[in-house]
Image 1 (cartoon, rainbow, N blue to C red):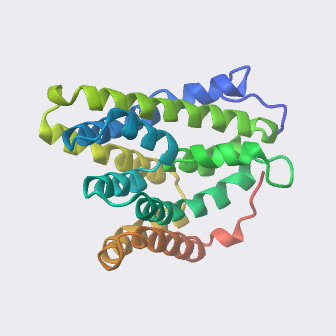
Image 2 (tube, one colour):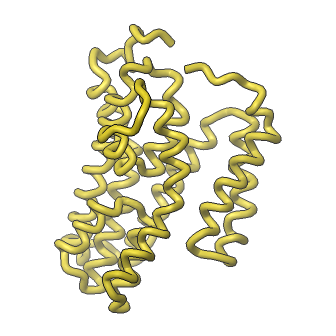
Length: 242
């Protein structure tokens, strides 16, 4: 696509990114973090601690690790190491997404900001839509999208924390599946053989690997399934057009 092309028929990529986020992406994270906020209110975590964790950690597996360790009274250093290792699974997302939105070489502060905002919802959208956006507008578009869903998650955690009494217990538990379900629907919409194979191989391998290692099963299974699906599906034969 030409760099002069419009994005979603809107005059500015920031508005286009916000528009793309408002709807299923923002709603999915809002509801998921509502469940997280309600859970932490239920275990007696202080609101400022819970909100700060969402703001700084911004990863549901790592957030769950943080809450579990905080509940058991684990020391600060041990908690830091556990959360850090839990978040290592996000490194492949950063490595694959940044090259698709950058227009210059070298690591810059803008890259670090985007890496902090790179939730799976944002990462999937980058992979699916980056090639359909003008290169010089991608960073603004995806950063606006990421900030919108990030703010939605913070608001959701706040609403869930203070609205615990109004949320039935069964509904609060069900909230956690909405974001994975939304990501599943996005992956299915990518109509490529390599995508279908990656999804199927991941569904078969990840549950088994999670029994072996809760911390590394998802990362190993996801990267392995994605690589095998890409190779078997012939993805390496297609030249990437940016």
